[in-house]
Length: 112
Image 1 (cartoon, rainbow, N blue to C red):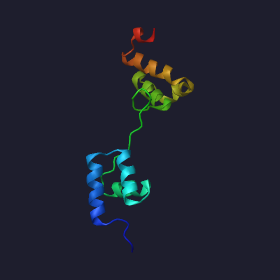
Image 2 (image 1 turned 90 degrees about the vertical axis):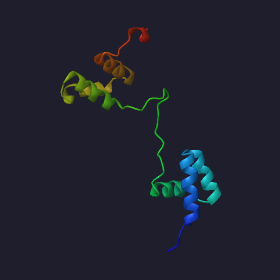
Image 3 (image 1 turned 90 degrees about the horizontal axis):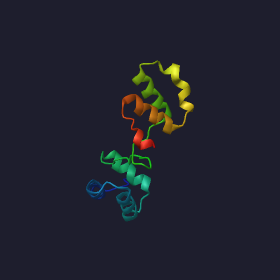
């Protein structure tokens, strides 16, 4: 069975990535070891050090689906989700506003 990485390479990869866990580090390692980015990510993941990048929205928030917003609204209003499932067809901004209003976080000054 052939070995893709020597122990020394693995130690170097883990050290460099642990110091700076970014996509740029993965790309540099890929070039340095002449391996694909997927190969580097796979090895770092098997070593338990790879951190998947978390997607953020344009506003820097964690993404929330319309379905999750409707579920949140149902829970806040103590309603069965089936009773308000049609709200999923509403614009996301409106659902967020409704959820904020129910939670008491609604600020009329922000909207105007």
